[in-house]
Amino acid sequence: MSNTTTIQNNVRLRVFIILVISIVIRATRTLATDSVQKATNILEVNYLLYGAILICSLMPFKAAWGAAGVAAIIAAILGGSVTILGTIATYRCLSSLHSGCIQTAPWSIITLSLSGILVALDLYQSWNIYQILRAPGVPQSALQRIRILFAWALPFGWLVNAILIYKSKWTIAVGLHIVADPTLIVMATTKETALLILIITTTVVSDFAAFFLVNVNIVRTAILAQIALSVAAGAMLFMPNPYVHKEENNKESEPIIEAVVTPANLENQKLRARQTKSSGRINF
Image (cartoon, rainbow, N blue to C red; front, side, top):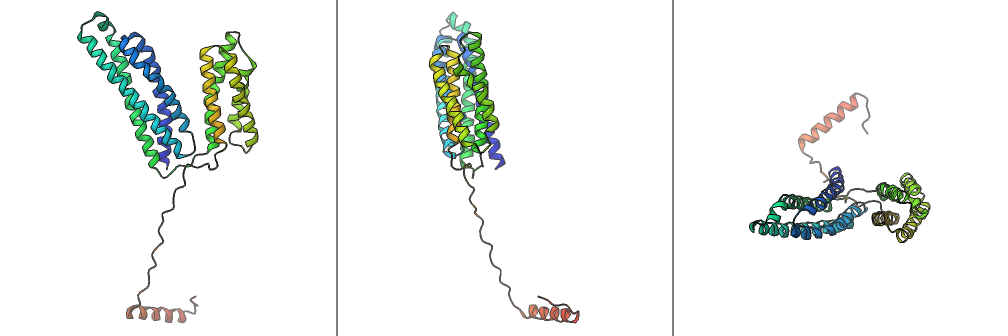
């Protein structure tokens, strides 16, 4: 059971590693050939898939892990397609000995190599999720997952407020997360379900209002992340069972061993009875 918990934590940690590599790819592909840039545009879809894997990995039931496995497989297929198409285009470009291709070839190779690493990580994620699905089950508290979700939402709240204050576009609709996120992190494991629902609902409503009031692209993206994390946390409050799967008890009933009466056993019993009687002890 502890091994399954380790695998789950590794899946979540690996998502952040994949996102870091994706950001590096986004930086290096601007110096690569046009064909590689067009091919790597497909990887933008993977951000949604990685977010889905991260959210599903926090859900306290195995069906969510099944959805995460499907997302990991799709990400691997898209990444493999990008790597194959980009490699073919780069090979053809270098074969033509075009001066522009030769200059951008190192960046194209770096970008495609990182893309190949992403494919390997996505396939490894799929295998780990398969192992989790085959495991008997690991207890996961939904309330603990709420604390994790708002711990992730906390940096987005500070980022949104800092950018809007710097641009002199701050609004009260984005300021709620500064107070609400730390409060929810502290109160996540309490029994105050009604209060938690009220706070989460208020933050979601304020996020939707802020999304339409603010015109800064990076802030709108961060607000969407806050909405996704808040909605996922709110959904966990309605989970009826805090466990993924109860491990079935497969213990078999112990066989009843009957004593076989033989003349030797009978003589031994009589001898012990005489010794007990002579010693004055009563054998119950």
